[in-house]
Length: 357
Image (cartoon, rainbow, N blue to C red; front, side):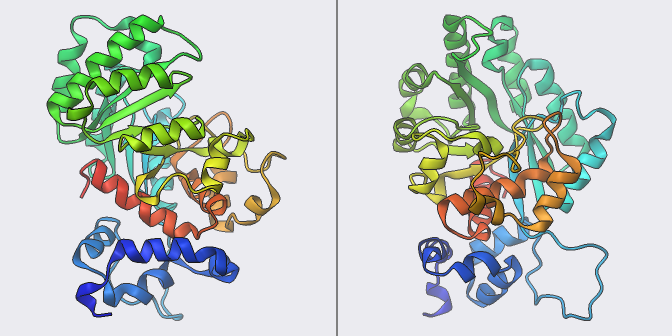
């Protein structure tokens, strides 16, 4: 096949579909080998993705070269981290640096209220080209919505660092705000996203039917839409995918054992690689891979380097973006593919959806 005909997405799909046939490929291939084996054939768009990820388009280091630290195995985008949380406080510099060392080269800092959306924007300016912000009101905070919120979100969203409207949506599990108020506030934010043509970052818990009713009202005008931290069923993921939405997955995987849940969805490969995104939802959704709920084969698929960040820096009290490689490896193991394919696919998707290219 000539270089001009070589297709990056075809390569990703080939790797994905072939992985069941080769356990050796699944367990031992390195990201550098994957990249540099196929580098001469990369199309310009694929080269651009690697460039944005910070991957040097040159030969790997020789054995004699020195390095100050072990290079990250993957290059990832965390599409949802609550770094404005007080749990990070004065340690934010270290948290961001650890994320970089773990290969998380871009992070979207979630706005869940007007105040936290402003804080999110401030953080994105403190760490340019590494942190990005969102602007929105979470369903838990919907009861606080007033006449100034719409204008505030629009003003925040005009900044180039702000790459999405949200976190907004419906949460009928906890109902911290009345359901009718949640629906009204969500509707207003969907309308803002449509007007500004900004991606929509959506929260949903036990409210899929009501959520879809709102989104279908705007379907013709919807921007790229991400169902953040998906924890639903086969039927729900199918409904979202049929509408062209993207699915964000977190460390929630460790505790899901439902026969109709996320693990089963991944094992059956119901989420196409080109619709998949990854996130930590830090400081929440800690992936407790030591739990008995996590199958042995999943634990054995986790690499020493990824576990070193998780075990040293993350806990139930405070998850961090540096745990993201573990989630990627769990997803890959459930899907019976190599984590490098999941990493590259989700990074490419995030760069495209949120305009980070």
